[in-house]
Length: 292
Image 1 (cartoon, rainbow, N blue to C red):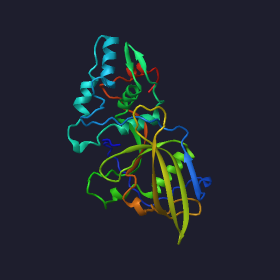
Image 2: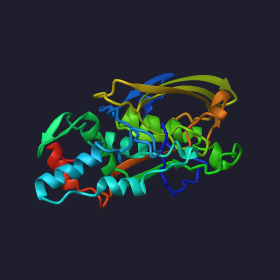
Image 3: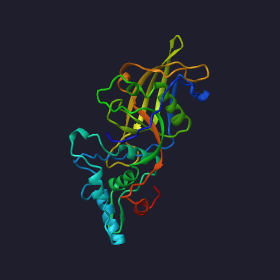
Image 4: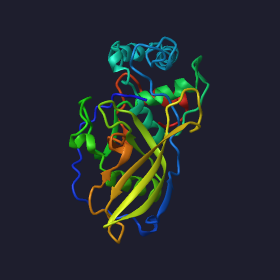
């Protein structure tokens, strides 16, 4: 799953002393969010089906609905084709998964097969409209710096998100607050955003104050024509930490094994949206019969 989230904020990770509640210090630890983010599609921008700008797609139906209910057909399909499309195969990862990930956390899964104004919106259509609304999400940046260079395998940006920060965010958000957040799964220049909803963490004493950690993380996955969260992916990360007796982190930790090159790039949590000019939030809510 790929997408083109252009976030520029940087979190500088230095020595940290973040404390997790004492109840979260067991050798084996599991956490799950109260709500699992719903599965949706990442709607690529490359000129291959399906796209949000397709004839007969979500935005074409939205434009048709405006024409039927206001007398003036919308222009969102043309706008999408002009602004969120590419014909360059090198950009095959460009898309809307950051928008889907944000929407899946912040909104109730929209209903399927809604007929309004003589237009029938399928499961893919309703989720596509909500996803487009969240193309420019507001957010809190949690940790990490985006890697822009495809050949970068050594910079500080490539090496973060620091293991201690990922470990802390999983325990603080998912286990303690039972709330999802989003991580880019690729350490390289492509951005693949997935919402986190569960983890299982095992620790072992390595001696000399070092703790070895193996953490399996579950993410909602982008899937077409599905309801709820029937499909998900998992990643297993290994790293070394130095922990205080109170459960705080004495340093930023080190990735180990395959995780040296296969770890998240950055993390963020959505807080809202800046709705696009070509799509009316009020009209989408009118179609769906729910707040988004």
